[in-house]
Each structure stands twice: as structure tokens, then as C-alpha cells.
Image (cartoon, rainbow, N blue to C red):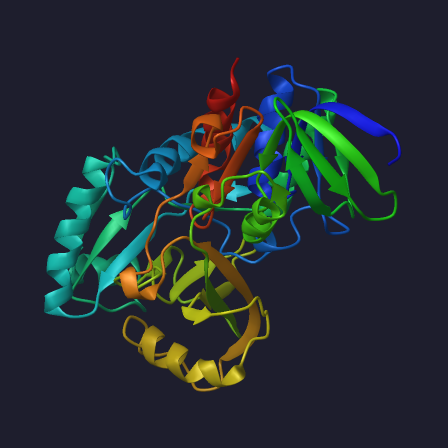
Amino acid sequence: MGEVLELDCVVIGGGVVGLAVARELAIAGREVVLLETEPMTGSVTSSRNSEVIHAGLYYPTGSLKAELCVAGKRKLYDYCRERYIPHKRCGKLVVASSEVEVAYLEKLLKQAEANGVDDCFLIDSVELARLEPQITGFAALVSPSTGIIDSHRLMESYIADIEAHGGAIVLQAPVLGGELLPDTVRLSVGGRDPVEIEAKLVVNAAGLNAWAVSESILGLDRTTVPERYYAKGCYFSLAGRAPAGRLIYPVPEQGGLGVHLTLDMAGQARFGPDVEWVEAIDYDVDSRRADKFYAAIRRYWPDLADGALQPAYSGMRPKVVGPVAGGGGDFIIQGSDATTHPAYVALYGIESPGLTASMAIAEKVKSLTLG
């Protein structure tokens, strides 16, 4: 065996959450090296989402998703203002398309308030028509603090902070396996420059690959690794002008928030994601899924024209709960107590609202690594 490179802290995964974690640890004084399998950071899940800054409405009170989304949203807006990262607090409407769904909105308002989101309110169909003339419904929940962000500019800023605090990012550096030693973690890293690493702290923030990384590490108690499920979501872009200036969401469906209207920073509209439970990672967008999109969208935008939707892209949600159990599930952030090893921290099920919560997730990880 060749020379082993001794490092202080290794973060595995260069998506928005891995970058946020590496940034937080570097600012805290750790010597951080981030390993990313792909040729560029943020090219997998972090590039395949709605780029929404979520308010924190839906998640069960006391869950990590609720706690870290609400805290992360505040941090993210502040950070975007400080760093001039393109973003917009455009607000969103959750629309009830039937009288039955109005009761859900009332329940959602109470859920939001319980989570510390205190700026939401209900409007009737008349006010909805005044705010967004092309959107129809029996009522709507207004969430003023929901917004959109240029996620790539955010990740670029995180990278700049990492490097400014002495951290390093190594691309095309897949973790092939490893071993838990008494107080450190040994990693075998492949790619252009294969190397053996021994680190005092390893944070597995590998997103979709977090399970595979943990399963490749000898000595890790397999009972600490949760179940894994993939929920695929497709997006379709809209040819023509957006029908609304706010994000428009229906009442949620199992495993997701329903086919909603989101906007990018240029005001271009796209719809999605839907939910398809799959066994393997696959980013193809089947144009035939558009039929369901038209039906779902016309519940709140009846004037959507035939042929106006074009296949755009898809993303994968790494989930710890499958469809039989309702498809929800919380973030799982395991410190050394949960992984049963002093040098190994693991994150699983980091899906939406992971981008919104990224800075708060990073603070949580830091708190679990102190000392």
C-alpha cells in the first residue's frame, strides 16, 4: 500500500448541501477538503430542482425539515442580500381547486404557524382573481416569504467562501470505499489521482449516493443506514408568458407538493415536479407524462393551451420513506452517536427543502462535530 494522506476534515459530495457544510466547517477553523465525483460541483440533484426558497409550511412541527427550513430560509435571504446573489421574494399561492380542499388550506395555515411561519394568510376566490387573474380556485393560502434563487450563483458563493477559508475542492474524486479505524476514517479515492486518505472527520453529504458511500465503508454498523427510495420528478417548460407573477401550488400529493408553477430569475415559467417512484436513477423525461401535467395544471390555470408544454428536465428525490408509508420522511443527520463512530457523520434523505435549509443543515452538522 502506498502513502496515506492524513487530513483533518473530508466532506463527501459537492452539491449545495455538501458545499454549505464544507463552508461552515472551514469558517469554524477546520482544514476542509471536499470530494466530488462529478467533473463539476452541483451538477446532480442541486441542478435538477425548482430553485425555490421554501417558507416551511408543510413539514411536521418538530421535524428537522420544519426546523431547518424555517431557520435556513432566514439565513439564505440574508446571505443573498449580502453577497448579491440573484433571488426574488415573489411569494406563492397554494390554491384550493374544490371546496373540499379549502379545509386543507385552513389546516396548512395552522401547520405553518406551528412551524414559526407567521406571515401566511387565506384569501377567497375574489381576492385570488384580483392578485392573479389567470389563476382560478375556491380559495388560496398566501405565503409571502416563499421565493426563488439562482442556485448556481449560490453554490459559486459557497465555493468562494470555502476557498477563502483555506478549504479545497477536488473534482472527479469518487470515494471507492473505506474503513472505520479507532479514531479516524480511511477512504480510498479514485479518479485521475487515486489516493488513500485518513481523516479525523468525514461528513457523508453525497446526496443520492450517501447510501452507497456508507455501504462501502468497512466496520460501519449497517443498521445505522436507513432504507432508500427514489422519487423521480419531471418538469415541463411553458412556451409563452407565465400566467402568474407568483409561484402557484396545488394541494400536495403523496411524496411531493404537486405539479406547481415555478418561475426562474428571468420570469420563465416551468411546471413540476410530478412524482414517479422508481428503482434506479434515470433522468429521461417521457413526453407522454405531459397528459397528466395538462390535467393537473388546468385545475388552477384552465386557459393552458394544448401544445404549450415542452419536456424540460427531471430530478431525483433521495427519500428515506417509500410510497407505502406516505412518501414523506424527514432529513436524517447522524452525528457520531448515531453512526457509532467518533469520526463519521452521515446525511440521508436530503431532498426538498435541502437547498433552502442548506446553511441551517451546515450549522447542525457543525454542532454535531464540536469537540
